[in-house]
Image (cartoon, rainbow, N blue to C red; front, top):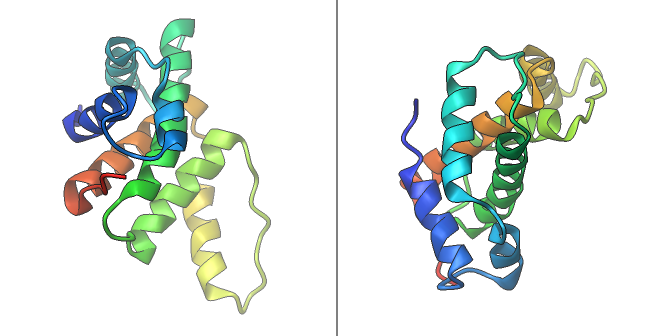
Length: 147
């Protein structure tokens, strides 16, 4: 299992309203960190298509994903295109969104579509876990702003 300590540290700071915008702080409210950690660990050990049976863990993981989607905007530096691609495809799966197949000449969208196609059947829980894991990596790499 990946160590998500940097993500948890950012979540705790937002819950305590020590830093970040009110929008990020609001997204952090009500997330039970211990249940989130448990859910993250359980999904990390599962296959790509398995669902979480525990409703509290599923809710904590969903709220953790929603917080991660806000927290990624607080990075000190914008992620590169490849890093954004991973965020994009897991976000789409988490939200249940379907990508339309791009035209032959749109190479960037073809790469996104290909990456999304490889994970489109993942469970929402797995997509949430992977998104949080990726945001954790970006927090470690770039750090976050204080406001």
